[in-house]
View 1 (tube, rainbow, N blue to C red):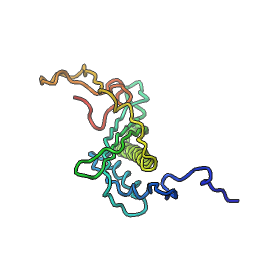
View 2: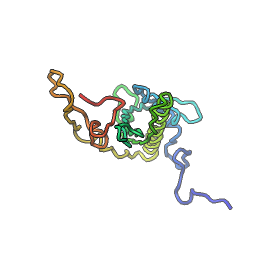
View 3: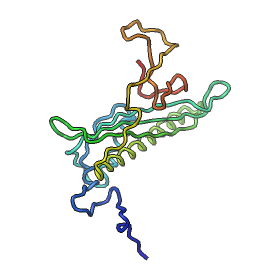
View 4: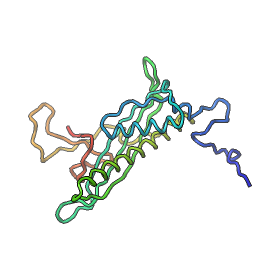
Length: 214
């Protein structure tokens, strides 16, 4: 027995549109140029986005530009009696903007993606520790890429802007770094920006991959 989902209104997100005038999501994704993202984790995220959007065919990034601003942070959990950690947790978020390709680009859509991963800390095996860290960061970058691709595809299908994350709303929050010497500059005392969870890194042992202190 063969079942069809078309009758109940279900259609694959990346499938060809049968409705007249509807956007071909796969074709539109191939027209997205992913702007450069700094640092190694940013390049991993960019590669994931390029692979997701190009699919199996050639890309033709002539219609849109996708700008992504990611944050990758690490925090030590499972603290032992000797103050060592048994596990490292990676938390990441990214804000993206889809712009037109024009002399005066227009913002079409924007949204936020988040991901969480981790790995077991092995201090005696430095090479394994490095590999675990790089592998976990790669998984997080891929997860962010998958989420952003899906959100952009939804916009192509519905023209409805995804919800904007709380991290992009309102002013940023900073906490004073009480254990840091003043730098005798006009910027005032050293401060640290709160993370995506509104908690400063100094309170959790978290170490941001891209610095967010001032």
